[in-house]
Image 1: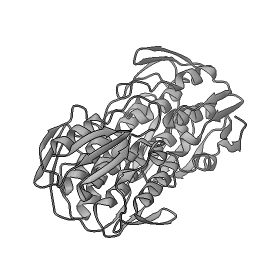
Image 2: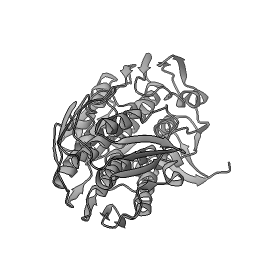
Image 3: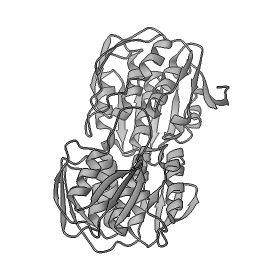
Image 4: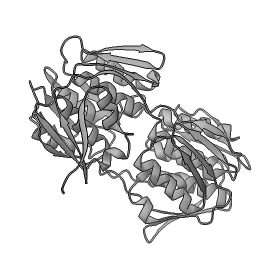
Length: 419
């Protein structure tokens, strides 16, 4: 099983390019099911989750061609509407094929999904929305089974601004009869990117990126070409890597507007963040200071950067308070950071982080995708050698992270380690 061996103490400097966004690519690839015409995508990151999605689409009968970060999908000969457990079990985003299959073919059978152990993340809100659009929905033998001769537009309020739920309902609504209005929709940039692609295909979607999305259903969609937006979580992780080592790192190809909450918090912590179009330079001229951080749906501070920010706060002066409001089980990295000498205690959904003078290298275990990144960042600044095990979690969402960090001067090696 692969692990990262990190020798800490290297000051990172230089430029690093951001890959396409995983959380935009996965729904957009699933959206290709809505049209029989070919769809062409650029800046598709080479990630485990993307590979799983492409295998799932191929299993459904979609023709898949890949050349580096370019992917072409043609869903003209879909042969089944069943997404099997052996593919869906590893990735929660697999549920995103539910809306497109139901909307275009009138039926879908999708195994209940798996993914990171960061909380329940129920799909009830997806199913409630589809039922409101006229679908018959049931759970049968571990599968979500949905049927509708044609979905009907409706006015639907989401109890929570679920990102994948918003995406599933938008995709389903594109081919529904009439107008669908989604209230309390997720405002994440990835939702807006999905709508941008679908509109290129002939959909009629307005308001995406805000909390009220309006979809006027059409009878059919056409093929289109689209470049995936930059990955704001990868960009933020690289910015934090520069900050934790008190280096000088410029992230290129980013979208600063998607990172405003992180930029503000880094500046509060004593970092200097300079923005020039798609370039973000992060330096730390003096020391790092403690922060109060509360994760929230976009445009609030991203839960997907909470573990990385916590790593930064372990070596900041003072006491930080990090509150996790999005997922109930997203502090699994705390015990591993404490193995490295961090001073962290948990009080419910709050982590109280006392800054220490130095972390020390240790063997640690990654428990989910973003926890993995937090442990890697801690290893960059720790004294001695850190082994981060179970980095298969990391490979789900970061494209060749060890190479990108290595290009900035970090000592990070991918090695095969015994269980």
